[in-house]
Length: 287
Ligand code: AMP
Image (cartoon, rainbow, N blue to C red; front, side, top):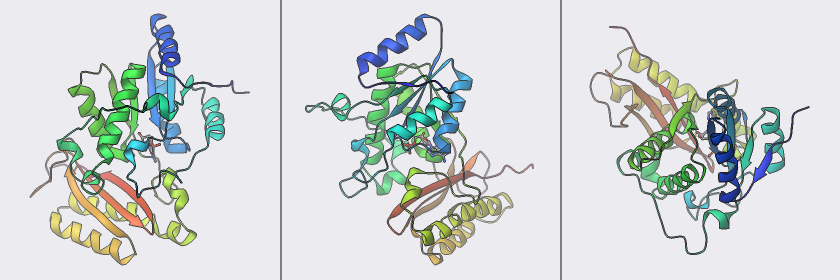
């Protein structure tokens, strides 16, 4: 039987556990999440266990990254189920702070990462990345792990986190884990639970479309043409498209002309009231 996973709710208790492990010579990995864990999250926990002696999973639905019109109140929560899933993976600790622990009433600081935050998801959700950067900076400083694991699913977020750790000299290695998908290609997401049966049938087209755009680009189709075809396909299938773009995989800068370095296709779209995002690498062609 899997052993139980302990839960701490205060920064003080978290630091005590991490300090005990690190002073015994063990390395510690942190996997930040908002809970309602699915296979995508669990793959990151497995990666954390592989790369470090101890894996800590934080569970905190971060109010600072939701706009007032967004789904904070209805965001799925399942701490009991999460704890069982983490016990089965032999995770070492859950950090599930209260809102007051993270944001005392006079909390006044905001971490704003310019440049990589500003486009794609950042353009339509202006407060989102400041909310993410603030909470991730706090989590990294609270825990001071040796490494922290984030999913490629939220690729722009991964770049924002890398940049903030570097800019603020937080001594932690940031690792990205591959996107875990449903058998029909839909990227796993806690928000998939919001989809109606009909929307769930349409949803895999998001991945199908960016995959086709990426292979068209690899085959040399002009960028504008490939993107226009992809956008039209998604709009015709009832997506309310926020963006479909190809970007440099390291800087997120627009790519023009020939694709030379690593590039990715990014999409953000609403299906009914559910916001979905996804991305894929443009396959490298040998010249
Ligand atoms: P969230 O709970 O949505 O904030 O996600 C927590 C972490 O899990 C983030 O680093 C996400 O990028 C990652 N994640 C979410 N869905 C997936 C997925 N389908 N595959 C890989 N990582 C994921």
